[in-house]
Length: 405
Image (tube, rainbow, N blue to C red; front, side, top):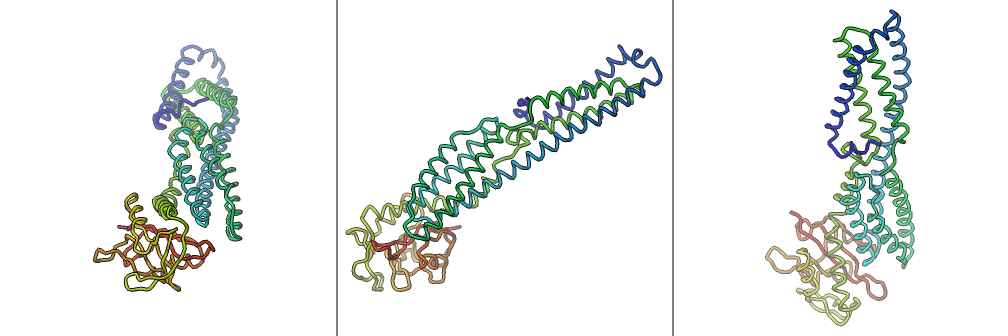
């Protein structure tokens, strides 16, 4: 009913409500004093009756306004909690995707990042206008279709997939609740009752008989407070509209802390895996020297990757990051092609993956590792994925990363 108030700064509209109510009270006081004062106060006890009527009415009207204020605040708080839960659930869903194999993981994470970015950049401005966004629905539908079409290949993936689907169901329900609150608010009939009550309160207040300066001050104080309270209820009535509203801060926090750091890493990893796959399937065939070490020779199709830098340099060219292919040598993993540089500026081929680092522990479990780690004494934001042969054995590692300042 009062949708126009959301199009202007809250401070200005609050001041406007106060001025309008005070002005209405003063005009009513002077009008009644000039026109009806002698008629109303023909008897001495008339002022007592007006005061009694004002007191009785104020109790009923105060209850109505108070209940509406509580209801508006509770609804505002519940919607704020709902948005926090939805964003937290989105973060949990994104984390669950960490255990999926490439390229499904990269694709699904990209879609979820695009969804989160769309909610922040496009959905929220529409919600502030009272419009239910639709573009995010298409993005979520695409994500759901791709996730449901994933077919687990082993028991651990089946368990993870079931948990991810459970998180997805929660995400869908929370999102539906958020969108339902975009247009929800106090019914128009209640606003008419509030408006009528405000008019009656001001008229009864103006009918009192007292010294003019006291009357003016009392009328201004009561009407100003009444106007501000009604404005506050209206401002909180629609939790997504106006300056006094629930913002996308919770989504932005999840995006900045969880999705954004992995954005470039995930895209680089997907590029490295795709580039290597263009040569064929990975396999081990024979052994050969790499910087004085006798190591297995890693092939993709017919192309030997040992000391072949084209596949990693292509990733570096496109992303400005670093890339490496490791080959498994006993319990260690040796860099056979890389653009990670040693202190002397040469490629760090022949060096091994830190045996005490966090990445190797995950790779030995057959799982990926994404996070911050130290490479040759320098901090990097990294991603490691196991390279598997046709028998599903881990024969090496894909690596991408960015040096941290």
